[in-house]
Image (cartoon, rainbow, N blue to C red; front, side, top):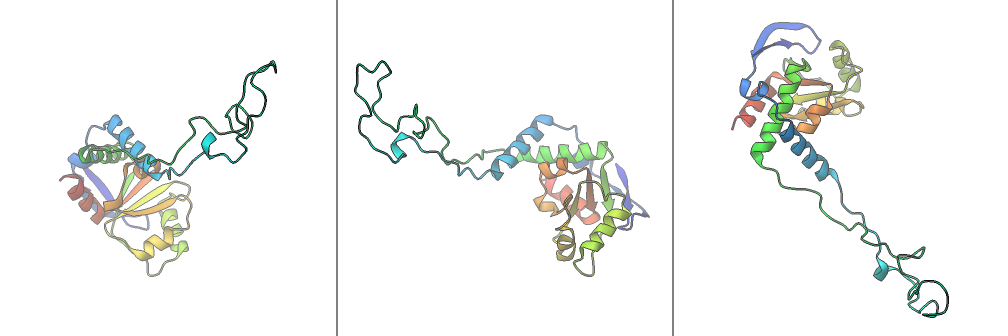
Length: 209
């Protein structure tokens, strides 16, 4: 599979790059994508929520009314869950929401997400580039040249480039990652996926193991 390589000013470079069908041309597996995205979102949860049960509530332990003769239900403690200010029944406790997912499933999910982007014509391969200095204006101009100013973009680099990363950090709908930290959620969440030439090679090496 071939795709045209663009310059960072939006012009065609006159070259094409071959994409591996084992990475960018697989039959997408929606269930693998679902599991990988579910795990990613679960790992973002802090799980520090907690409510107090009746044994943790501050208050008197005296019996609040006599057992019989009141015409209402018997009650032994003001901390009972049936009273306002009482403890909560089966409330949330601190927990870890993460779960195990096989490496092969995660790799299949990333391949599927990348293949979806290629099928939908929402992936762009760029010549390797850098900025002279970290400037948000430079990154905005870069997006404008690619006519992606109003799109949610994900730029994937082979290695971390401080100037590019800092330039795009303050832009709301722009994200910059490296190939080895790419995840399924970010790929699907972006309207346009931008790959540098070297990152394509690195992704193929990582996902073809």
